[in-house]
Image (tube, rainbow, N blue to C red; front, top):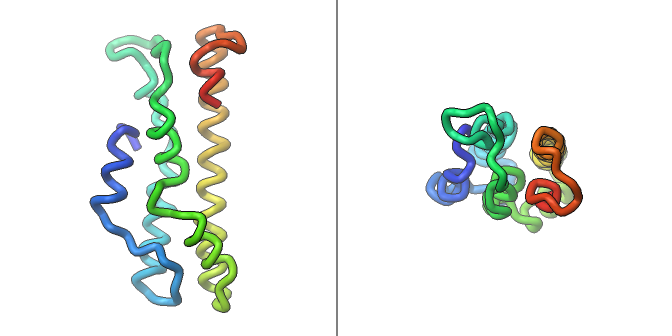
Length: 130
């Protein structure tokens, strides 16, 4: 997402049905969920506009979390999907969860790059955010 702060509102507006079930609608929804989660970390949004310098403050924690593990995908949905009798539902759920974990790893790496660029120590804003 190029503008991560729009993510939270977006997920609620699209009203995806992520309750696991073996249906074409659910498979399409979970595939779309994966596609959105797989978007690259918007590093340019961390820069001061018109500059090549990182902002001293990271985005709000709620924005970060919503871009990694959106609130529309609950623990219950992942648990039900992974425990489903359908192997296809299990597979799709596992892929979605893997995309979330991959995104988390990308966000951590990006934050570490910003920390290094800003020469932060343990008390830095970006360092404390992860």
